[in-house]
Image (cartoon, rainbow, N blue to C red; front, side, top):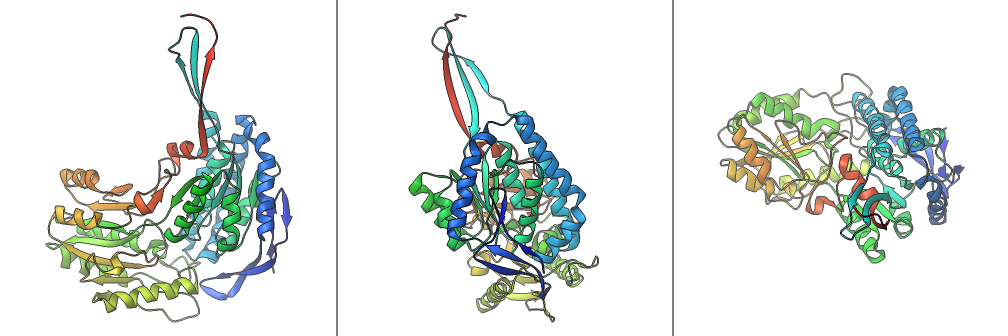
Length: 478
């Protein structure tokens, strides 16, 4: 049976114990055993990153670019192999798993250009014989704490940008899905990173988190709001830079002029692809009353045609949820919704078999006050809320503690622009699913959905670098 250890200071290091990584489609299948690190080992990883920082920060930008390019090349070359591993440990379909690995390769290739694109400003000083220069420098040692739902892509987009700008990294992936992060660490080391520039520690965040946060110059976290708040509180005490992506309760408005077939396709993709386990997943479908019944009828028909099963099977549309604990949480949310009076239009139950399979689930007759429409479920569960016109729909969409992604389906340019301007969400989709983002543009939410700046694209430089303004008295007038 495969055993994988932690990466610390360029070495494979045993942890305090081995934990099995299981296939959610077949829980009896153990993918491998992964070593969980101790607090002392997490501190050792931070020390290794600290020791490697001066050399990596001062490295030639072409060197950094070449390393990241090689990582992207290998991810591309091994996309089918690593995509299958991703599917086995997380449960999304094989085509989604392969697609995630290829997207990770694209992220590394894009980030490989960042060291070469980095510029600055030279401005005339306001005192005679002076010039003001503005430049960017790495923040330092960056701790990355990543979730289980995108076990390759989220570590990729955080790591690629952090390294591109000259930071050194300690990555703690979700203990539920360590396999992809371990493979990424192995690729990074073989790509030519100096010893200690990238370190991987696996384990329980409640145990390792405090030491990691306390030892970092910056922390980038994607996960639950509760954990995010705890990280923020601890970081503020130390004045540590922090970036949080904390989920959503994303609305999709179906306007009365919408192409209903398009609207159904968008809702189906947003709510049920990747088993609904996306922070940007569509969970509240706000439908104008004039098209409500026709939309629901079409959506239920499409849901009934979804093939739920072995994610390695090419015919499968939706795989299992990631774990038994997540399945139990989803079923609890479904039961709670029924108790509040939501009408079950489709699904709602665990499917037969050994895996953690949940039927795609749709509720109707709901309103925005119900907990099912307030709390993030993180599973294949969506609710329909009727609306009386666009203004009412926008009010419902904005009435949420979360503000990550939102969308509208409409044929009207004016309706689309009205929604775009008035939506509170950090991401707005017009005639497209709420889930699905590009790697070259900023990503992130507002309010409790996001804190500390956006990720990816042009926004990455703001988090992973510090600005420096220098004044040079060169004595040359004019």
